[in-house]
Image (cartoon, rainbow, N blue to C red; front, side, top):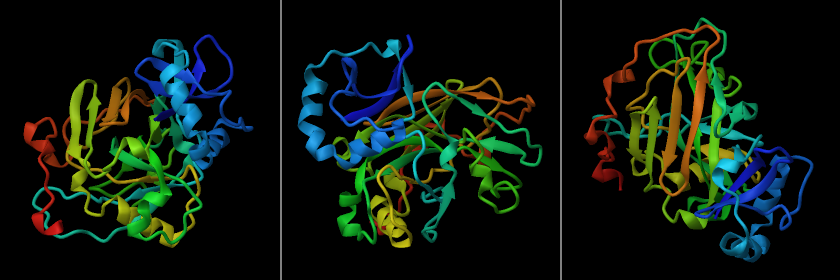
Length: 312
């Protein structure tokens, strides 16, 4: 199933729904409504197995709203935690995996489909960049989950754009600080949460990202240095993971480029969906429109997997 939060364009409350081939199905009468949309979605995650038969019937038989009659919101408006992998993809001629490491990204940075990425009025970073990523949606509480039991802690998956302020080279804002990934609006997620049964193998998904219609990111999640089971094990060893927490799996840096005022960007991950956002910059800055690091993801070879055979 594909879970969403939406609001009718004619107005009204934000309610949970299912994205189907027929349109968007309202499931508000089938689930427990909480004080906030975030808590409502977390409740669906916690209670999903009990809710599943009714939701499946609604997916197949309930009336559906036309997609253009609703406004989709981020399926998790304010996750408790967003953990992001540092690097985590085999790239170029690299043949040794880097140590697994993560940073924390501001949960208040979340926006959703159709929203606007607002570049901050800071002049220190020389570029604000896009990173298209698969994100894991946690079912908790999850603590010390071994990689053999990783599925017990995974509810589903969504798309995430890890917008990043970068200074010289690949350093983030403020010379090594990860704060440059946490400006407001720097964590677009959506368009839905695809439940785990929709994606039997998260390490075999095609990720694509367009900037003004130009294909930039174009890679397969099989190229992760540290795969999804290891990410769940690592994160849950450090801290307890709660329902609705996110682990962003990192990006293949081939194809990185600047985000600039007036652009439209789109992310699509196989089996999850596609969403579009706008970019606005109050200072109207501009950077060279090229591919960062000289890796052109518009090349048909860019999706070729770099994972060495020795990595399994």
